[in-house]
Image 1: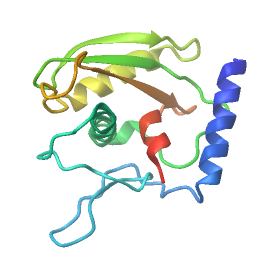
Image 2 (image 1 turned 180 degrees about the vertical axis):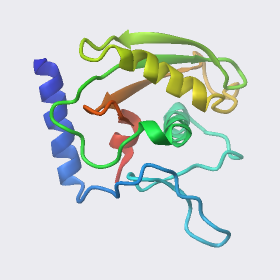
Image 3 (image 1 turned 90 degrees about the vertical axis):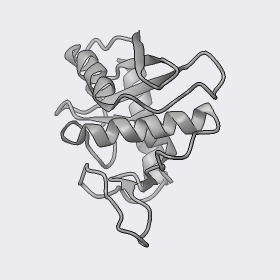
Length: 164
């Protein structure tokens, strides 16, 4: 529990230092031709073009997080992280060469609201496939941390960390 409070305080401080929270909307904004790039709502992070390959794992992970967020609009929330967080499942996603999910390994099982573990796995499967990974170094896998609030809506740590 102490770890969760410390993590929550750290995230809250990080978000406070970054400026005002984003809008309450949790859907992806799609840009029209000639307009600004589409962004993941509440984050200001542009949605990467699916036609361009990620050059390294950090880019791939960010694109995967954007895809998970966009594929689960009713299960996400925007704005500052609550203190404390309700649940923090951590998953490792193992991929096939084509970007489809081969397996999901649990790295951290939450003690509070254990049902969020299965919710997070479903969110990942809904967003798959994530794009080819054959050009990236093995192992073809990435970790994602789901940050759930008391309403059992999530933000992804990858997107929280990438927020400008």
